[in-house]
Image 1: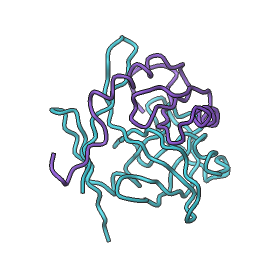
Image 2: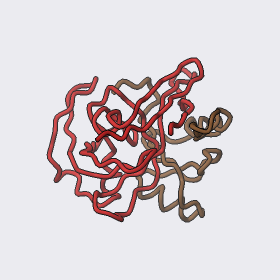
Image 3: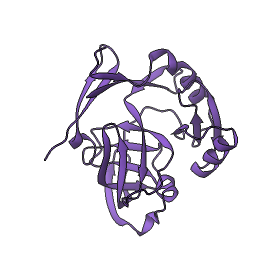
Length: 75
Length: 140
């Protein structure tokens, strides 16, 4: 990696993320820790998952909206 | 400066793993110092004409989403209505002012499409290393 490039994630950090996605309810919002290594909160709405994250002490999570199913994407 | 982003894995209904290129972004109203949304993961999607975000994100930054200009978009499942609003997108390399679409039924949080995202980056998808490289363009 040269100084021109900045890695924003690593391959190894994606596995907890994948587990979180597999276990999350469909059509929900989930909050991951900043390094995507831990599932912080799950909510049915953006507002709910943000509130739960802040209650858990994580003010800068990464939010992901899960689809109704993990069928292949064609949008 | 460019950044390399490892493809993100997602589960599929067959118990296997798929990949997409996605980055965490924030959005806010265009006015300076407007509060930002939390960071959320948005998929880099050249098939999207413009950037599309879930309506709940629009509400979170203070938009009355359905008061935006309605626009019909053609998805693979057929046409749907989205609502247009001017916003600020916090992306690698700085803020992008754009007209974004907000959808009440987008299955994910956001799509980073041609207008507003692809016209601000040189983007290379590299399947040999499962990475996407973004180089910000600052066009006059």
